Image: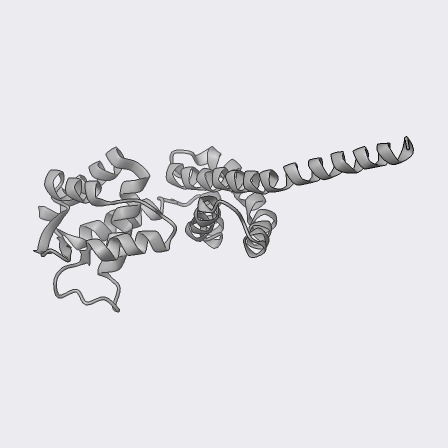
Length: 221
């Protein structure tokens, strides 16, 4: 009974709070399964969660969502608290795993086209691309290494992403979350491309203008 109740609570939570809720829940679950973390105090801590989110380029304070998960939905329960750290345990970690797997792996049925799209989507490692672009988008100026990283991504991945989005739109009900994430990648890429344009537009225009002015003066003296 508990498992079914918690699964419903998790699904309601994700439905209401969207992508941020999914990312926070998935990250917390991954922490709970990390063998390099001491879990004697709980499945995950606030510090670990914030660190892991930042590590993937997500600058987001999960405090409010954690409060909602605990108080409103009973998905987690506080297992330890002190001045320096706070830990939680999942009320039903198997229910969390099942809901996350269902969200990450859409029902493919027997349609080979849907199965192929799932394979294409996973092969792109979209979470990694999203993390890279978020880091680039946060920078005021891009250095040469950043520019090269972005060029490779733009020429190797973005066209594929656009193609997959187009294909997934035929199965929008199945791939709604995936389409949303891929569109975010394109939007971030557009933002980063804008940084490159701003960095180059003013310099060439001014340089050309000065060259024309000097040339005109030389011709008229």
